[in-house]
Length: 254
Image 1 (cartoon, rainbow, N blue to C red):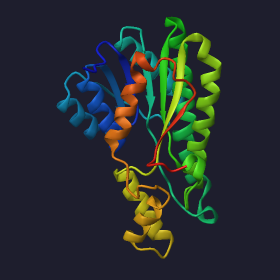
Image 2: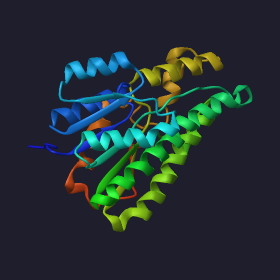
Image 3: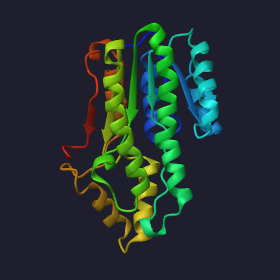
Image 4: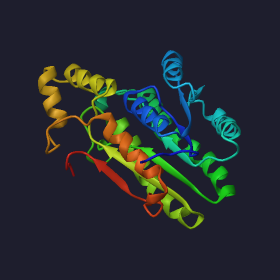
């Protein structure tokens, strides 16, 4: 039977569709889990559902607070962080010629810069214990691009490249860094993407849904539990030699 008992894990973006599924799965496998997000109500609901979860409200766009946040997490977990899962992310979709600098900056700041800073501060802790795992949730649009998502695509592509570089830097320190790259997942964020495609094109909702799943050979949206189960595998010791990989969950999409 799979369990993650005594694994100390931090999960960002726990109040979204993918994050909630990851949180449910990890806590059911007996991990020691800290979750964070900006939606206080959803954090409270998660805590009510899983009383053993430690929930901390943290705006990860507040970059100067992130080192202190990781320090607090480390203290809560007995000065040992086994896994950091960078899942938090936002979209602010628009056609490039209509996209303002604020829409660009906010997506890059939260999706890419915050991931870098959280990883940096966590790796400092992991180096002291000579082990650790970083799991970054990215997106297929990081290498395919997508209509109206030049900012989101750039942020996710940046995470892919950053993860590869980090995996090379810390392999000898017994710290692995991997990415999970799903195509469109059946979540509220994807629903917003579909609605934005409708807004900036002449497509209706059904056509927009077909458009975003057209490059997936299975022609379907990915289920959040599929990402969660892959995260579990990367958290286990049996994946200790898996490093620097981008694991695609996309129905065969290249």
